[in-house]
Amino acid sequence: MKKTKEQIKKELANQYYGEEAEEYDTNRSEDPRRQAVIDIQKKITLDFLKNAGGKNILDVACGTGRFFELYGDRKIYGIDISSEMLKQAAKRRGVKKVLVADAEHIPFKDNTFDVVSTSQFIMHTPFYTNVIKEMTRVSKKGGSIIIDFPNKFSLSYFFTKRRIASGTFRHYNLFKMSEIEALAKQNNLLMKEIRHTVVFTPMMFPKSWTSFSMKLNKILIKILPFFTYVRYVRFIKQ
Image (cartoon, rainbow, N blue to C red; front, side, top):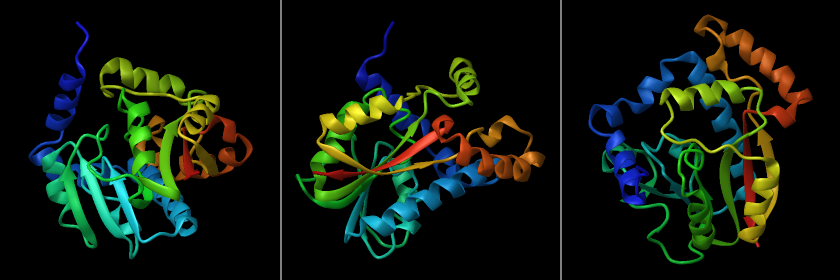
């Protein structure tokens, strides 16, 4: 039987609880392959933020606030459906406010934020169209919206499909470039910057091959950007 929207959201809220929330960052940084990808994500986000400017930022589905350190002197606001994850986020430097909230109903007024960002969330929520609409609503005109989109034509596609089939991923969205462009048009957003991550996810290789896989990816991403694993996009609200 198909799950209701409320059931899905409750599952997500309960997934990151107690020790899982407390050890979320540690568990991911212990694997050098995951850390290598996180480092790329952070580098892209930092580059986007340098061009975005602004005095405040909203991190949607912020989790433990692991990206908060990138936000510089901006006033940091975060929302997440997991109260346990937010307990960790609230400890971060520069936090103005974190709130338990549904990303389909962001509890802020229209045109509030200079930057609205999310990482590794749009890929996991079945309700991403509503989330992007809300992110746009609370962004100021001329403000930046930063989102990552897994690529439907990635060379890691079959590896991702296996993880979905095995239940490693509860839900996973894959996007064509044309679908990202359609989302931009629907929300009156300008696609200002696009960055690519890797061609082959390092998780396809043994941990001891991490250095080799990243060197290989550095070469491949320059010549095969169409096959990137994930696209990061900085939109401008028009």
